[in-house]
Length: 358
Image (tube, rainbow, N blue to C red; front, side, top):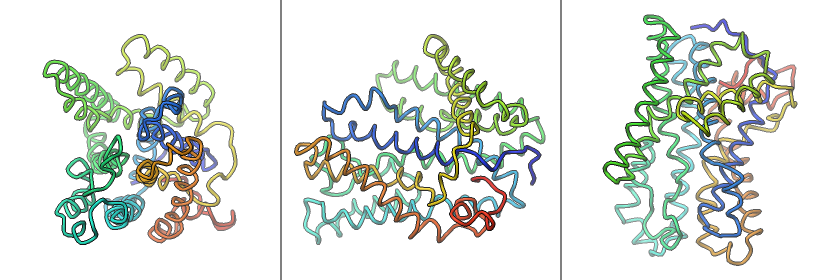
Protein backbone atom coordinates (compact mmCIF):
# COMPACT_ATOMS: atom_id res chain seq x y z
CA UNK A 1 0.00 0.00 0.00
CA UNK A 2 1.60 3.23 -1.08
CA UNK A 3 0.56 6.84 -1.33
CA UNK A 4 1.12 9.23 -4.21
CA UNK A 5 0.19 12.27 -2.17
CA UNK A 6 3.23 14.40 -1.24
CA UNK A 7 2.88 15.61 2.33
CA UNK A 8 5.65 17.89 3.68
CA UNK A 9 7.57 16.56 6.63
CA UNK A 10 8.07 20.09 7.95
CA UNK A 11 4.67 20.89 9.40
CA UNK A 12 2.94 22.18 12.52
CA UNK A 13 0.94 19.08 13.44
CA UNK A 14 2.71 18.72 16.79
CA UNK A 15 1.94 22.34 17.68
CA UNK A 16 -1.70 22.02 16.65
CA UNK A 17 -2.28 18.79 18.58
CA UNK A 18 -0.62 20.16 21.71
CA UNK A 19 -2.81 23.26 21.48
CA UNK A 20 -5.95 21.14 21.07
CA UNK A 21 -5.05 18.99 24.08
CA UNK A 22 -4.46 22.14 26.14
CA UNK A 23 -7.86 23.47 25.04
CA UNK A 24 -9.59 20.33 26.29
CA UNK A 25 -7.70 20.47 29.59
CA UNK A 26 -8.49 24.12 30.31
CA UNK A 27 -12.12 23.79 29.27
CA UNK A 28 -12.58 20.80 31.57
CA UNK A 29 -11.19 22.82 34.48
CA UNK A 30 -14.50 24.68 34.52
CA UNK A 31 -16.70 21.72 33.58
CA UNK A 32 -15.40 19.54 36.41
CA UNK A 33 -15.10 22.14 39.14
CA UNK A 34 -18.31 24.01 38.41
CA UNK A 35 -16.65 27.17 39.74
CA UNK A 36 -18.42 30.22 38.38
CA UNK A 37 -15.21 32.22 38.21
CA UNK A 38 -13.96 29.80 35.55
CA UNK A 39 -17.07 29.98 33.36
CA UNK A 40 -15.24 32.29 30.97
CA UNK A 41 -13.04 29.33 30.01
CA UNK A 42 -15.99 27.43 28.60
CA UNK A 43 -17.11 30.54 26.73
CA UNK A 44 -13.68 31.17 25.23
CA UNK A 45 -12.54 27.57 24.68
CA UNK A 46 -14.61 24.74 23.27
CA UNK A 47 -13.54 21.22 24.15
CA UNK A 48 -16.08 19.99 21.59
CA UNK A 49 -14.36 21.94 18.82
CA UNK A 50 -10.97 20.65 19.97
CA UNK A 51 -12.19 17.03 19.84
CA UNK A 52 -13.66 17.59 16.38
CA UNK A 53 -10.31 18.97 15.26
CA UNK A 54 -8.57 15.89 16.67
CA UNK A 55 -10.91 13.71 14.60
CA UNK A 56 -10.01 15.69 11.47
CA UNK A 57 -6.30 15.18 12.09
CA UNK A 58 -6.90 11.47 12.69
CA UNK A 59 -8.75 11.23 9.39
CA UNK A 60 -5.78 12.79 7.61
CA UNK A 61 -3.07 10.82 9.38
CA UNK A 62 -4.68 7.40 9.70
CA UNK A 63 -5.57 7.12 6.04
CA UNK A 64 -1.99 8.16 5.34
CA UNK A 65 -0.73 5.53 7.77
CA UNK A 66 -2.78 2.81 6.09
CA UNK A 67 -1.74 3.85 2.58
CA UNK A 68 1.92 3.84 3.62
CA UNK A 69 1.76 0.47 5.39
CA UNK A 70 2.97 -2.54 3.47
CA UNK A 71 0.50 -4.92 5.07
CA UNK A 72 -2.66 -4.82 7.14
CA UNK A 73 -0.68 -6.36 10.01
CA UNK A 74 1.88 -3.56 9.86
CA UNK A 75 -0.86 -0.95 9.93
CA UNK A 76 -2.58 -2.61 12.90
CA UNK A 77 0.68 -2.93 14.81
CA UNK A 78 1.45 0.78 14.37
CA UNK A 79 -1.97 1.79 15.60
CA UNK A 80 -1.85 -0.51 18.64
CA UNK A 81 1.65 0.61 19.59
CA UNK A 82 0.68 4.25 19.38
CA UNK A 83 -2.58 4.25 21.29
CA UNK A 84 -2.85 1.30 23.64
CA UNK A 85 0.16 1.19 26.02
CA UNK A 86 -0.38 4.68 27.44
CA UNK A 87 -4.15 4.17 27.46
CA UNK A 88 -3.86 0.92 29.42
CA UNK A 89 -1.35 2.51 31.79
CA UNK A 90 -3.79 5.31 32.65
CA UNK A 91 -6.65 2.85 33.22
CA UNK A 92 -4.53 0.69 35.54
CA UNK A 93 -3.02 3.63 37.39
CA UNK A 94 -6.46 5.09 38.05
CA UNK A 95 -7.96 1.74 38.99
CA UNK A 96 -5.30 0.94 41.57
CA UNK A 97 -3.89 4.34 42.49
CA UNK A 98 -7.22 6.01 43.20
CA UNK A 99 -7.84 3.50 45.96
CA UNK A 100 -6.09 6.15 48.06
CA UNK A 101 -8.82 8.64 47.16
CA UNK A 102 -11.72 6.28 47.80
CA UNK A 103 -14.04 6.66 50.78
CA UNK A 104 -13.87 2.89 51.14
CA UNK A 105 -11.12 1.14 53.12
CA UNK A 106 -8.54 -0.66 50.99
CA UNK A 107 -9.95 -4.10 51.70
CA UNK A 108 -13.45 -3.12 50.65
CA UNK A 109 -12.18 -1.20 47.62
CA UNK A 110 -10.18 -4.06 46.14
CA UNK A 111 -12.93 -6.59 46.72
CA UNK A 112 -15.64 -4.37 45.26
CA UNK A 113 -16.89 -5.74 41.93
CA UNK A 114 -17.14 -2.19 40.56
CA UNK A 115 -13.35 -1.89 40.51
CA UNK A 116 -12.87 -4.98 38.39
CA UNK A 117 -15.82 -4.04 36.22
CA UNK A 118 -14.20 -0.63 35.64
CA UNK A 119 -10.88 -2.21 34.67
CA UNK A 120 -12.42 -4.82 32.37
CA UNK A 121 -14.73 -2.39 30.57
CA UNK A 122 -12.19 0.39 30.14
CA UNK A 123 -9.32 -1.83 29.02
CA UNK A 124 -11.42 -2.80 25.98
CA UNK A 125 -12.58 0.80 25.37
CA UNK A 126 -16.14 0.26 26.65
CA UNK A 127 -15.86 3.23 28.99
CA UNK A 128 -19.60 3.83 29.06
CA UNK A 129 -20.07 0.48 30.81
CA UNK A 130 -17.93 1.50 33.78
CA UNK A 131 -17.08 5.16 34.22
CA UNK A 132 -16.85 5.26 38.03
CA UNK A 133 -14.76 3.65 40.75
CA UNK A 134 -16.14 2.64 44.18
CA UNK A 135 -16.09 5.55 46.60
CA UNK A 136 -13.99 7.72 44.26
CA UNK A 137 -15.08 11.29 43.44
CA UNK A 138 -18.49 10.53 44.94
CA UNK A 139 -18.91 14.13 46.12
CA UNK A 140 -17.65 15.78 42.93
CA UNK A 141 -20.13 17.50 40.59
CA UNK A 142 -19.24 14.78 38.05
CA UNK A 143 -18.30 11.31 39.29
CA UNK A 144 -16.70 9.86 36.14
CA UNK A 145 -13.03 8.99 36.63
CA UNK A 146 -11.91 9.84 33.09
CA UNK A 147 -14.69 11.20 30.96
CA UNK A 148 -12.29 12.28 28.21
CA UNK A 149 -11.72 8.68 27.14
CA UNK A 150 -15.06 8.41 25.32
CA UNK A 151 -13.33 9.53 22.12
CA UNK A 152 -10.83 6.65 22.19
CA UNK A 153 -13.39 3.98 21.35
CA UNK A 154 -14.44 6.11 18.38
CA UNK A 155 -10.81 6.39 17.35
CA UNK A 156 -10.37 2.62 17.53
CA UNK A 157 -13.58 2.04 15.57
CA UNK A 158 -12.23 4.42 12.95
CA UNK A 159 -8.94 2.51 12.78
CA UNK A 160 -10.96 -0.61 11.99
CA UNK A 161 -13.09 1.23 9.42
CA UNK A 162 -10.16 2.65 7.42
CA UNK A 163 -9.17 -0.60 5.63
CA UNK A 164 -12.83 -1.14 4.74
CA UNK A 165 -13.06 2.41 3.39
CA UNK A 166 -9.97 1.96 1.22
CA UNK A 167 -11.38 -1.34 -0.06
CA UNK A 168 -14.52 0.58 -1.08
CA UNK A 169 -12.39 3.29 -2.69
CA UNK A 170 -10.92 0.71 -5.04
CA UNK A 171 -14.25 -0.83 -5.97
CA UNK A 172 -16.77 2.00 -5.84
CA UNK A 173 -14.52 5.01 -6.19
CA UNK A 174 -12.93 7.28 -3.62
CA UNK A 175 -15.09 10.37 -4.09
CA UNK A 176 -18.47 8.56 -4.13
CA UNK A 177 -17.45 6.60 -1.01
CA UNK A 178 -16.33 9.69 0.91
CA UNK A 179 -19.49 11.58 -0.03
CA UNK A 180 -21.68 8.63 0.96
CA UNK A 181 -19.93 8.31 4.32
CA UNK A 182 -20.22 12.03 4.94
CA UNK A 183 -23.93 12.18 4.15
CA UNK A 184 -24.65 8.99 6.10
CA UNK A 185 -22.95 10.50 9.14
CA UNK A 186 -25.03 13.67 8.84
CA UNK A 187 -28.28 11.74 8.49
CA UNK A 188 -27.39 9.57 11.47
CA UNK A 189 -26.70 12.61 13.64
CA UNK A 190 -29.92 14.30 12.56
CA UNK A 191 -31.84 11.12 13.25
CA UNK A 192 -30.45 10.82 16.76
CA UNK A 193 -31.26 14.47 17.46
CA UNK A 194 -34.85 13.95 16.27
CA UNK A 195 -35.22 10.84 18.44
CA UNK A 196 -33.81 12.69 21.46
CA UNK A 197 -36.42 15.41 21.06
CA UNK A 198 -39.27 13.02 20.22
CA UNK A 199 -38.51 10.60 23.06
CA UNK A 200 -37.23 13.25 25.50
CA UNK A 201 -34.12 11.14 26.06
CA UNK A 202 -30.54 12.36 26.21
CA UNK A 203 -29.40 8.82 25.45
CA UNK A 204 -30.00 9.46 21.76
CA UNK A 205 -27.82 12.57 21.87
CA UNK A 206 -25.07 10.45 23.40
CA UNK A 207 -25.50 7.90 20.61
CA UNK A 208 -25.29 10.73 18.12
CA UNK A 209 -21.79 11.54 19.39
CA UNK A 210 -20.57 8.06 18.50
CA UNK A 211 -19.77 6.60 15.10
CA UNK A 212 -21.06 7.17 12.52
CA UNK A 213 -22.02 10.53 14.02
CA UNK A 214 -18.40 11.72 14.12
CA UNK A 215 -17.48 10.27 10.72
CA UNK A 216 -17.94 13.64 9.00
CA UNK A 217 -14.79 14.96 10.70
CA UNK A 218 -12.73 11.87 9.88
CA UNK A 219 -13.95 11.99 6.27
CA UNK A 220 -13.15 15.69 5.96
CA UNK A 221 -9.59 15.02 7.16
CA UNK A 222 -9.28 12.07 4.77
CA UNK A 223 -10.52 14.18 1.85
CA UNK A 224 -7.82 16.78 2.51
CA UNK A 225 -5.19 14.02 2.59
CA UNK A 226 -6.31 12.58 -0.73
CA UNK A 227 -6.47 16.05 -2.33
CA UNK A 228 -3.39 17.40 -0.62
CA UNK A 229 -1.65 17.98 -3.94
CA UNK A 230 -4.32 20.60 -4.71
CA UNK A 231 -4.87 22.04 -1.24
CA UNK A 232 -1.61 21.66 0.67
CA UNK A 233 0.15 24.56 -0.98
CA UNK A 234 -2.60 27.02 -0.12
CA UNK A 235 -2.79 27.07 3.70
CA UNK A 236 -3.95 30.70 3.94
CA UNK A 237 -6.73 30.06 1.42
CA UNK A 238 -7.71 26.92 3.36
CA UNK A 239 -7.94 28.85 6.63
CA UNK A 240 -9.91 31.70 5.04
CA UNK A 241 -12.35 29.32 3.32
CA UNK A 242 -12.70 27.33 6.53
CA UNK A 243 -13.45 30.43 8.58
CA UNK A 244 -16.06 31.59 6.05
CA UNK A 245 -17.75 28.18 6.09
CA UNK A 246 -17.63 28.08 9.88
CA UNK A 247 -19.39 31.43 10.12
CA UNK A 248 -21.93 30.24 7.55
CA UNK A 249 -22.52 27.05 9.55
CA UNK A 250 -23.60 29.22 12.48
CA UNK A 251 -26.46 30.47 10.34
CA UNK A 252 -27.55 27.51 8.25
CA UNK A 253 -26.89 23.78 7.69
CA UNK A 254 -24.30 23.41 10.45
CA UNK A 255 -24.03 19.58 10.13
CA UNK A 256 -23.20 19.96 6.44
CA UNK A 257 -20.69 22.81 6.54
CA UNK A 258 -19.03 22.68 9.97
CA UNK A 259 -16.89 19.51 9.55
CA UNK A 260 -15.44 20.85 6.29
CA UNK A 261 -14.88 24.24 7.91
CA UNK A 262 -13.03 22.75 10.89
CA UNK A 263 -10.96 20.52 8.61
CA UNK A 264 -9.86 23.39 6.36
CA UNK A 265 -8.90 25.62 9.28
CA UNK A 266 -7.07 22.94 11.25
CA UNK A 267 -5.13 21.48 8.33
CA UNK A 268 -4.41 24.95 6.98
CA UNK A 269 -2.77 25.79 10.31
CA UNK A 270 -0.96 22.45 10.37
CA UNK A 271 0.64 23.10 6.98
CA UNK A 272 1.01 26.87 7.22
CA UNK A 273 4.31 28.69 7.83
CA UNK A 274 6.62 26.27 9.64
CA UNK A 275 6.96 26.98 13.36
CA UNK A 276 9.95 24.74 13.98
CA UNK A 277 10.48 21.35 15.64
CA UNK A 278 7.94 21.77 18.40
CA UNK A 279 8.01 18.05 19.14
CA UNK A 280 11.77 17.75 19.52
CA UNK A 281 11.41 16.97 23.24
CA UNK A 282 8.49 14.59 22.76
CA UNK A 283 4.85 14.46 21.73
CA UNK A 284 2.90 15.19 24.91
CA UNK A 285 -0.52 15.92 23.41
CA UNK A 286 -1.87 12.37 23.76
CA UNK A 287 -0.57 12.11 27.30
CA UNK A 288 -2.19 15.40 28.31
CA UNK A 289 -5.46 14.29 26.81
CA UNK A 290 -5.68 10.94 28.61
CA UNK A 291 -4.33 12.03 32.04
CA UNK A 292 -5.84 15.46 32.63
CA UNK A 293 -9.37 14.42 33.58
CA UNK A 294 -8.55 12.29 36.67
CA UNK A 295 -5.99 14.88 37.76
CA UNK A 296 -8.59 17.65 37.71
CA UNK A 297 -11.09 15.35 39.40
CA UNK A 298 -8.63 14.64 42.19
CA UNK A 299 -7.97 18.35 42.73
CA UNK A 300 -11.72 18.97 42.89
CA UNK A 301 -12.13 16.14 45.42
CA UNK A 302 -9.39 17.76 47.53
CA UNK A 303 -11.33 21.04 47.40
CA UNK A 304 -8.42 22.88 45.79
CA UNK A 305 -10.77 25.20 43.79
CA UNK A 306 -12.30 26.36 47.09
CA UNK A 307 -8.85 27.40 48.35
CA UNK A 308 -7.63 29.03 45.16
CA UNK A 309 -9.20 29.05 41.70
CA UNK A 310 -5.93 30.18 40.14
CA UNK A 311 -4.01 27.55 42.08
CA UNK A 312 -6.44 24.90 40.88
CA UNK A 313 -5.93 25.75 37.22
CA UNK A 314 -2.16 26.15 37.48
CA UNK A 315 -1.75 22.96 39.50
CA UNK A 316 -3.97 21.03 37.08
CA UNK A 317 -2.11 22.26 34.00
CA UNK A 318 1.35 21.74 35.52
CA UNK A 319 0.57 18.28 36.88
CA UNK A 320 -1.04 17.14 33.64
CA UNK A 321 1.97 18.29 31.64
CA UNK A 322 4.40 16.61 34.05
CA UNK A 323 2.45 13.35 33.92
CA UNK A 324 2.30 13.57 30.12
CA UNK A 325 6.10 13.98 29.96
CA UNK A 326 6.55 10.95 32.23
CA UNK A 327 4.04 8.96 30.21
CA UNK A 328 5.91 9.78 27.02
CA UNK A 329 9.34 8.77 28.30
CA UNK A 330 8.36 5.84 30.51
CA UNK A 331 5.61 4.25 28.41
CA UNK A 332 4.90 5.64 24.95
CA UNK A 333 8.41 5.71 23.47
CA UNK A 334 9.11 2.17 24.63
CA UNK A 335 6.42 0.80 22.33
CA UNK A 336 7.03 2.93 19.25
CA UNK A 337 8.78 1.52 16.23
CA UNK A 338 12.29 2.75 15.55
CA UNK A 339 11.16 4.53 12.37
CA UNK A 340 8.22 6.30 14.04
CA UNK A 341 8.04 10.06 13.60
CA UNK A 342 7.17 10.47 17.26
CA UNK A 343 10.42 8.81 18.27
CA UNK A 344 12.57 10.19 15.49
CA UNK A 345 11.49 13.77 16.15
CA UNK A 346 13.44 13.75 19.41
CA UNK A 347 16.63 12.62 17.67
CA UNK A 348 19.21 14.74 15.84
CA UNK A 349 18.20 15.84 12.36
CA UNK A 350 20.78 13.53 10.76
CA UNK A 351 19.08 10.53 12.37
CA UNK A 352 15.48 11.39 11.58
CA UNK A 353 13.63 9.43 8.89
CA UNK A 354 11.64 11.29 6.27
CA UNK A 355 8.21 10.84 7.80
CA UNK A 356 5.40 12.76 9.42
CA UNK A 357 3.17 11.49 12.22
CA UNK A 358 1.24 8.42 11.16
